Amino acid sequence: MTQQSIEVFLAVARLESVSAAARALYITQPAVSRHLRALEEDLGCALVVRGRGQRRTELTSQGRDFVQVAEKWLLLWQEAREVSGRDRTQTLRAASVGSLASYLLPPVFRAFLEEAPGRTFTFHNYHSREAYDYVAQGLADIALISDHMYHTQVETIPAFRSRMVLLTGPGLDWAETVHPSALDPSRELRLPWNPEYDLWHSFWFSSSAAPRAVLDQMSLLEEFFSWQDSWWDSWAVAPAVVAVPLAKKLGLTIRTLESGPTDEIIYYLQGPRRKEALVRDFLACLNRELARRPEVHSLLEL
Image: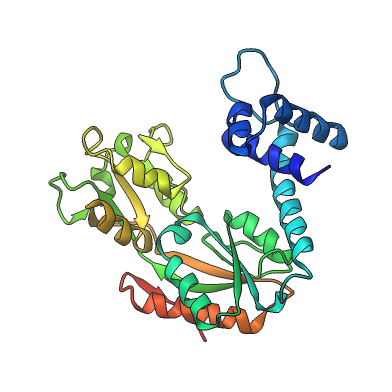
């Protein structure tokens, strides 16, 4: 098992294509196939589904399970190579769910690094469940997540809350406050914000109702809302911490939901091995950014 084989596998998993992975890595398609087969021989199982005429490369169940293992392997490999190269006590390894990385955290990262020029920083997007595992194993020093879970080795601490609002295109002549019963689910752009939101959604909309799109990436929500010429009547429910900057960027309208979902609470995770000073400084930078945003309420106790 080599670093290149792991990188090839993750490229195939991400791009869902051997040819696309080859182009991205600047190697040939036969080379990609050789790396995949060598990795499968090392692991003793098939990682990709092989068949003639397939337009996209699918992972087997073992391949899907191996994605997270492969990502951790690369992280550990990178850390092992950097052991002698820098002061690890001044490196903060942070993670968050994708929505925060897109619409809240960039100015926090900048402030954190500018405060002390000797600091270094690494960041990864993870879903909440993944973030718990990475923090517990010491692969991340702090993570911001939306789904509160129980983990024996991880402390879950409230960071801030944000009300859930209705996002619509600028051309809809709706009232400022909208009841869920007035919403057409076939025009919804739905994202899985948290379990509480899913319960609210199940209460107001039939399980047989098909949204216009179910998305798992904030970049896709931006893209779908930008198609105002054809899908001008789309709507989505989102936390204000996301909705406000997105509305400013695309000219969308924010409306209040009557009987809407409960506020989204974002938590930060701390594991058994802590960098107290770095995390404290990072949270202070986060708290200052939250204070500049009236759509959120900080829960940090610093």
